[in-house]
Length: 330
Image (cartoon, rainbow, N blue to C red):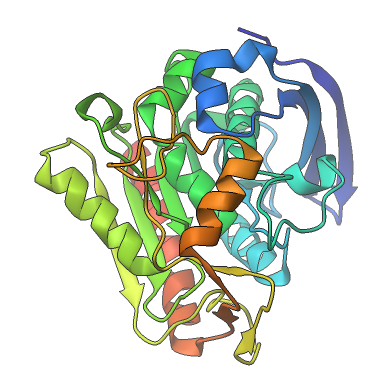
């Protein structure tokens, strides 16, 4: 297993007490879950960075619970940063993982191959391992969240075959909060239905046609039907479209984005994703993934603010991480 290489640790002072650190480390570029599980050491190395920030009243003698955030296919946006700011006001440290910027990519909308969920999950665990040794981070209380593609990261980072392949299970997140994640890949064998013991809660829009909430509900129902011991649940906000938690953004159509309502792909324990349960054709390569999506996905998803859902999502996010990363440690 490749060890993390710290390239640099640069500390900036923002204001009187607000501390921010640019953290750089080595990760890799696996396209698929399968490449993590079966061939991680052969993946092309990749330098990655992110920004670690502490609450305004920083106490250098204190260890802070940490929330690692992951952006969506359009990279970091203002509403993502508002969540991180809210968490710091509550007393958390935050880590803004810059997986897209590190790879020189602005957006993956329309192809989803230049930066993948697998790459960012690996980045997230490399960051977790490194930050767990930081003198001001409470390594036992690190949560992960993300939006859209980053929501997929927050969800499938709880899938144990990946965790075991990356670090043998030595480093795990204490709570997972995926926000409108893609749930159209689902574990189908008994051996593949293993998740961490950490709580997982999905926030999704009932009118989201980019990554429909129904796929996430189906995933949860499947796990429960198979008596899988996983702490997972979902909140669906009625009439909320993709990116419902943006601020004052009218409902618009993203012409080049996928609509994934009819897409469902089974996955086995080694991360092989198949076209269907009956057609066992692997779609783990970029061109095969594009062909598979061409058979089930449309184009032109809608996105925009739902103010009621936005407020509820922010309030729930604050409650969720406070409960699982702060209150459980008191």
